[in-house]
Length: 319
Image 1 (cartoon, one colour):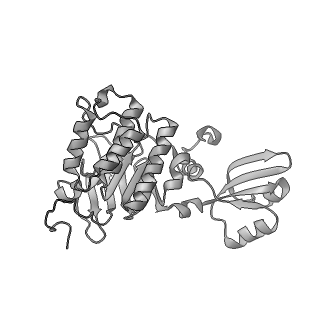
Image 2 (cartoon, helix red, strand yellow):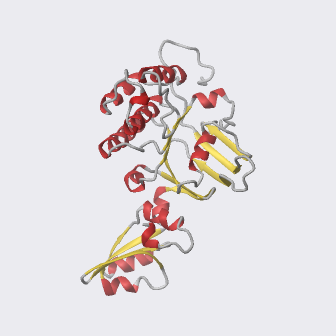
């Protein structure tokens, strides 16, 4: 039976399938500004994945998240959200907005009321809300439900928003820089809770973050946006395969560098390590390992810095 037409019962309805999303030729302009927040953005977010949404400040990440959550509509182009085969325009669409949870850095909470009031609001709004999970997370983050968010530190307020996002159990859950202000133990507690709940209750999670080295282990897919344009949208392993690291005797390493773009270079005595950009074929890998070199993958953060580096910028400063 379709989740839309299922009769109401005392128990929460079974969650619908994880939502995916598609953007086609999306342009978003604010006012009469010539610069577009999104400029011809086209991408697909696969349902049932954790997708990393990466971009520099002002790249268009927050605008994209707002489109998916129906907080605004595009100037042109199409946005579709929903379960596989049931994608719909989310704007002013109660079915879509009920099943999409966006948590922004502000936490999207009632600042001048008790935290419990915000929890009650989301419990009424989200049909798959898990109050027990919300309570456990507030305990984990040491947040009192009787305290007003306006009285919380920036980190506690961010953690409160993260707890709301996880407890919503929304088929599409979007975290937009939600970690800001959290200390390292709180951030890692959030990552662990996200992975644990994702494994038990599959859904689609979009995670926007500047702390790429911390969160890239979570990513199954990666979207990189720069100046309103989508540079890539593909599985994380495909992104990592865009580069390679070689470690070993310096003379041997240099044999494989000729004609390739070097992202980074290190040397300690007679041992060198280089990070190269570009595909490294099976035969080349075999030749490198056969020569005694260690061949490794490249962190997503290094590739992100390379892809979004401004012309004329200093590479080492960007890193």
